[in-house]
Image 1: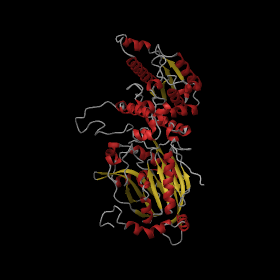
Image 2 (image 1 turned 60 degrees about the vertical axis):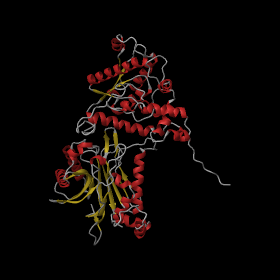
Image 3 (image 1 turned 135 degrees about the horizontal axis):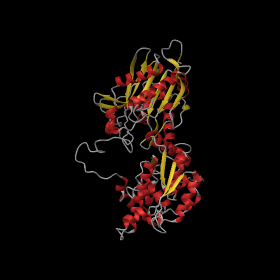
Image 4 (image 1 turned 90 degrees about the horizontal axis):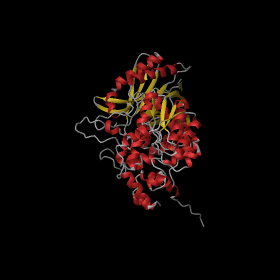
Length: 306
Length: 283
């Protein structure tokens, strides 16, 4: 449970569960029911976590092609469905939930992740992040079916300021950079990462590459990274799981195996972020230099936005 | 005098590497997911030829599903090598999987008696397609799924019979080059007799894959690995590959794209299947 520091609204330390799942393809209701059982398992622990994070497209599976239009939900409908699953499994208890889903916003479709505050008898949508970098190459075809999110926002939560970056969003170093500059102390990364590369030492090379990117984001900005990955195969493409928590010094404090469903349990202590930033003040340095970088006339920025 | 550290192209000229432990772990999970979790099928049927591809497939299936759930079918034609049958038996004995031998001579000759002038290519295709008739029927009988054994090299070079070797709905080896299949075979403990012999489709006496193809698998795999990354032929030659080898491999790949696709369907509406109506295979 969250440990609060004197006089602070947000806790300095909070407990997290990352739920690594293998959804049944396209069976939205069935996967919600499965989530309810997972919630019951988590609620049966001696101490309830503060935050539970699911991967990208966790209630439908990732590769949907045209079926995305059958399964995408308005954010409020998805929020209500997920909270119903929570109440069914855990009862009238407080928690914060983050989960990836395909969003139908009045006929415009997004690959989104929702962040919910769940009270004893009410709930609210704190934030919906719409994936900005839609992979559309090789096996990926997101932009054929989906629209891009247009804004990277951080948002205040009971657990401090957070940003969500979905899968490829975090591969672009500028994304965690902007999130950190905008005040995020933790980045949640719901993901569906098809594995490849069989010449690695002890794991698929794509898993190693992912971890390097996440560790780099955490270390450069002194932030926590909470990565929740899908697992299981979708049409021959195996999702690499490996859900993990990385602390602001780049240490992987816990990591799930690449294969198999599981719940990853860990802690975020925001005081670690303060210490990491004190010993490696790269974020502070960037804040000082960023205006010069962005005012560079050679950057391809739209005129009038500088 | 400072030492000079030079970059070399040596690794590029070698067949692509594989960590067989990682690949095995991943392929076992793939087979369990595809058969048990997705389809609720617990048994596999494999056409066991006596070659290394089907042997590796049998080993992977035995690890993923249990030997008791793997059914090997040997399907010799009258001209098939006796050594192939014996090599397949080594796999059956080593794994303790179910095995049955179903001679296809009667079925194949039942048709070919009307086509006495059929050349070796046509006869080979009839045999390959007859074997698939048997495999699918045995799968229906055993409530099992036929498992494909084709590797990436033969798929890219078009060295297979369309709608025969490529028909099983699940294939664990299709993204592995032949050189990687050999490495996997060594890791899995496939008998050395199968690994060390010259690969052969065994459709004619003394036939070998490398003789048919005109290039060794090692050289073909090294070229294919670079070719797939997008390098042009002249770049491959610059990197040290033989020009004739590059031309041969490129020619085979470019002339067989059709073999790696489903049949071409005339599109007449804006609801054409797989053009507009798009659903994933596991939906």
